[in-house]
Length: 157
Figure 1: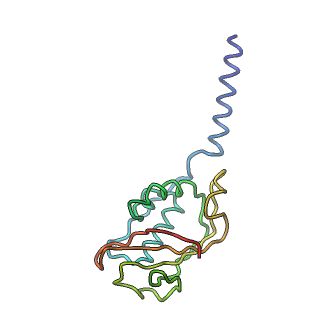
Figure 2 (figure 1 turned 60 degrees about the vertical axis):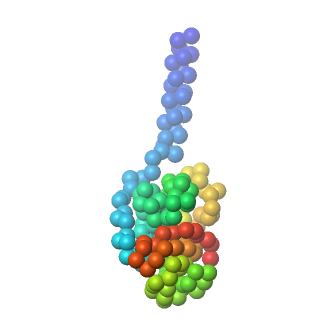
Figure 3 (figure 1 turned 30 degrees about the vertical axis):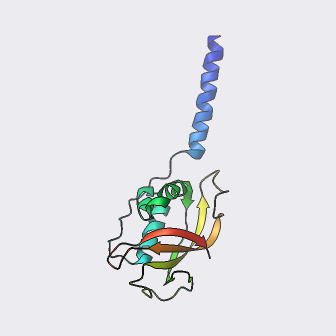
């Protein structure tokens, strides 16, 4: 009976160790500084992508509007790598034209385009968006010209 218990314990430990190897902790992260309150919308998206790619989910979460932060934290934890990413500029809200940076400098809403090559962690590859090269439009809002930009939504472009 004791041998069976020991064998069962060893089997459970082996399964746990195997699961840890596949699903274990994220790669060591790097801290990403929060952008200054007067940072551009592009700088906020750049910081968000840096934080997500660096597994600094606390910073990534803080760059979103409060009602989206829990979803962002889950998504951030599922990302393995964003590859090379590029922030392409802003356009007026509702326009993903990629107008020149600062086109809506005092506005309360802008869309910032970004491209990257998404790689989800193991067993997360059914998440949205799908793995691979993607272009996303990040909708940012702020309550006034002196307030910080925060991401409110993202969509495929």
